[in-house]
Length: 309
Image (cartoon, rainbow, N blue to C red):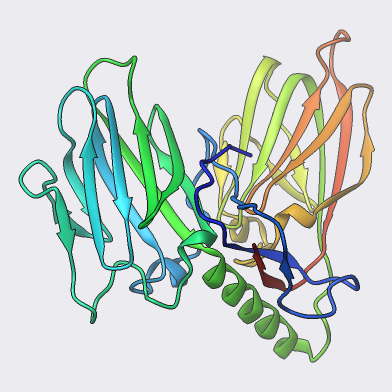
């Protein structure tokens, strides 16, 4: 997890339901803020039905050259420029904005940037595009998004999606209801069975909207089976899950995944966050290739908002 500044004393985050949580909301006497992961390879992980809702997420586009800060409250955004050129081609939820000409952008109560009932302390940030770091912090008025493009020539396009724990938990509840209504029974865990031959080092990244193969060393694997569906990652490094006959429900808590079976002469590792799974295969320490298996089970359980003080 990336570290973030902690200047507010109240936060909210989503946790899976379990026998140890008898109430949907628990309050703990801790001075702590929880955030979710931000990675250089992060993609947008909120579903279209969340991002389409006005005031429940923030979609930010900007050309950044140097360092900049975006300060966000429920009804206003303010740009604080740091080094090198001012940002250009800025958009907040599709609204064009020139921070150099107008450093503060305000909207009315009928169309807020973030709806008033949403707690800013439950923010989740995903960098979709950008060559430098993007970090999330707080000040007395709300969120701060810090862009750092130092060390590169010229400007680069950045795209950031901010969602909130309130909406993530709401989406999780809707996902459980939809799956239950189809059969009248609690949804079964999602199973992912991956089999391939590895020669070197490789990884498979699984999001709710795509599956991606990353090759690091030696020969590419040319035949992978994922839930008995054939896949050539060299020819097709990225695909949508539904194209292979399965789907990953939006709102699914991927951090609850378990590696229930693994085979191969090298290491098989499962790395997980709230919105991404990564399975790593490491066969670098032996000649030739070897057959590898990774079976992952993901429980489908509702997320609940937890307020931490």
